[in-house]
Each structure stands twice: as structure tokens, then as C-alpha cells.
Length: 437
Length: 96
Image 1: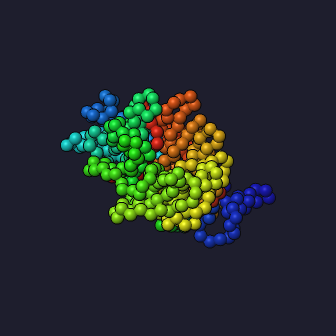
Image 2: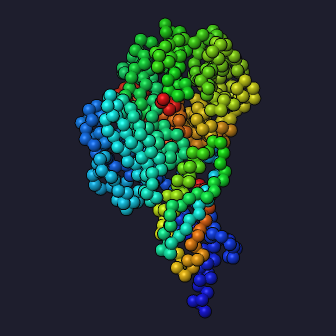
Image 3: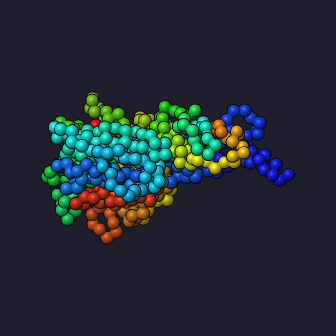
């Protein structure tokens, strides 16, 4: 009796909520999974040294190291080491990686491509399905070999998360090479991971608040020439620089609109700061706020349909939101302490900010209506968040307790994966670029 | 039984506000050993919008990996006819 019942019971288990006599395939709903890092293997595919790539190491190793560092810095991948040496010139079987439990495998083959170029064949394998999920041949000048690795990491990131990768990007900072505050301040641009820094200004004038236009080739910053603040627009391709013509007053906190055609900024005069919008083509400015109190740090939503800004009109800095013409102003930050420097995420789903709680500054995120506020960093003084194009990481400025000068740090949105961007000097006010061309 | 075996293998990409609610339906044929015959193919995707195509692709990739990673499924041989042809509906609604 028991024995003959068993198959029927099993059948019911299999069906799980579906009429037992239904025609067609067995239907099963899977509504839960395990949100854990993707197990990934990124072995070195040895190819021998290539002059100018890495420092005397095998070129395949040098590139694989950059790909691994990129992906690990997001907290979304768990790296699996697999025994054995692999060469770029032979087929790499998937079996050892499947046995090690890797779900994804990245194989990158680098070789010189003539004319000081190198090519990097980057492929993401689905180990269990034994198929290529995404692949790309990346060709770059040898001197820019790190970009090939960053673009490979971007390919893997976007195929596995659905968001654009933020690895082949640049970071703009205000660097200070001297010891005393205000000494030898320059604008420096570098790869997002701190490599390949280059000075954009020479330290003759004070510079502050740099921002990228959409993409990575035009920038804005504040320059103090003879003590007078001017907004400078620079094109990094042509080297052209121009001071923007603005109404009388002291400008600050400028940012581009999402289409790159306007600049939104704060202008202080007669002891009151308000938000203005400048149309770059026509040179016309328009005042968007006029309430008493300092209105500053404006930032557009990526769709251009709203603007967030900081205002102390309530007595302490809080975050407000308004329409692009300045109408419908309303406060959205109501969490503990004061809130400053809002930055809208590239996907439009979150606003990052600096929370000011007593003498402590920390980075937080919230939804664009101010709900679900979450503080994600835990330093003594963390400020000035800037989004990566992935919408899954932020750069910010951290001054460690007891230190006089800050450095740039990067965090994921959980705050669990935090690291310092290595720079040989102190750095502040990070601006993270979009994708490089 | 199938759900209990596949759930731990599924590692979906984390969703964002713009990801929407995408579900992926995969139809697979299983051999008597519980192994997947041929490559699993997506038979239907719901919840696609103009902005979540890349997320939906990543979700479909995670679904394919989950099935292949879990195979062979351990299922009662005497009921093979019932599970030879399975439609798995992956819906990330309960993922925290």
C-alpha cells in the first residue's frame, strides 16, 4: 500500500501547485535565488613580455591582474584560483574551471598588433554551458595597455550585471603635492584606479570643484585667479580653455546638464547664493531659485526632468528638488542631521549625498523622493560623492581621523567594499568621468 | 523538488529601480539521468521595457547558468514521463 502511494506523492511534490493532470511541460516557479558574488576565474594566459606592458612581467599576467583588480573592486565577484599554467597560444579547456566551481571564466589573449598597437581578445565563457557569453577584440596603443584590460572588465561587468562597467573611465581630482593646505594645488586627471595621472593645471592658481561633461573629454572647474573666482570650461582634446561669462557674483558648484549643453551652478551675491542655469551656445543665464538662504550644489536628474540641490533655507543644509525651470521646490531629505552635496545616479534611481551629523561627515544614498535613506560609509570625514557610470560605485573624499589632508576612496553601494585610490599626493573633490571614447 | 534543487544554483544579478520586474521562462528537456539535453533556451521573457534590456540579458544568463550548474537533477526515475519536459519560470520577486 505504502509503496504504491509513493509515486503519487512524489508526483504531487514535482507538480508543486499545478493541477496534476495539466497537459504540456511540467511548470515550476523559481522565485528565490542566492544573491552572492559570481564565482569567476580569470587565469593568466602567458604570452611572454611585450615592451612597455607591465614592469618586466608577462604581458598576459599584467593584463589579467588589471581585469581581476577591476572586477574584485565591485564586490560582485568572487575570484577562484585554478592550478596550472595556461598559455595564450594553446586551447584552454573548460573542465578544470568547471571542477573548481567557476560559473564564469574570462580568457584574455594579448599580442602585439604592429604600429605600437596591441590587441587583446577578451572572452567571457559560461563554464557550465561551455559557450562564449560575450567577446571582443580590443585594440589600443601599447602605451595604453591598461585600457585594454579595463575594457575587458567592462565587457564582463555589463554581460553579468546588465549595467555599463565603470572601469575604462577617468577620475579628476584636486591634488595637493605640498604639505600645507592650499599649497601647490593642481587639477589632475587619472584612470579611475589611480594609474596614469596627468596634470591639467600647473599649480599657479587655486582650482576647485572639477566636473566632467557627459563622456570624458570636456571639463568644468573653478579657478581663482587674483582671488577672483571664474568658471573655466576646458576641452581635453583640443586643449581649448575659456572662462564662462556669468552675471556679477561668486560662482561655485557647477555641473553640466545631461545633454552637455548647459551648465548649472550656484552664484553668490549680496550674501545670498542662488541656482542659475547657463546655456553654453547662447551664453544666456537664467536664475532658478531666489529664496533667502544659500542654494548650492545643483545636480540634474539623468533625464533632465528634475534638479536636486542643497539649501540651508530651513536653518541647516538639506536637499531639495525642483523642476528644471525652478518651480515646485520641495525638501526631500528628512533623515538624521544635515544633508549636502547631492549627486543623482546615472540610472536615475538614487541620490548620493553627504550626511552632516555633528562634526562627522558620511556618505549616504536615498531614493529620489528622499525615502530609504541609507548611510554607507563610516569614516570620520567622508564627503563629495561622485557616481561611476555603472551606478554601482561612488568615489568620495575621505579625511582620516587625525590627518590634515584628504584622499580619494571608492565604495560600492553596500559600503562593504571600500578602498583607497592610490595617489602619491593628497587628493580631494573627485569627479568620475563617463565612458572614454 | 526541482525548485529545491535549482534555487541554490541561481545567482541573479542584483536589480535596480530601472530594472523593473523581469521574468524568464526556460523550457528544458531532461534525460533519464536528470541531465539537460541540448542547450536550455529562453522561451519567454516578460517585463521588458525600453531601459532594462541589458538587465534582462544578464538575468537570462544567470538563469542559463543556474540550470546547467544544477544538472543533473536528482529526480525519481519511475516518474520520468512527468519531468522529461520542464518549463522553469524564473521570477526574482522574492529576492531580497
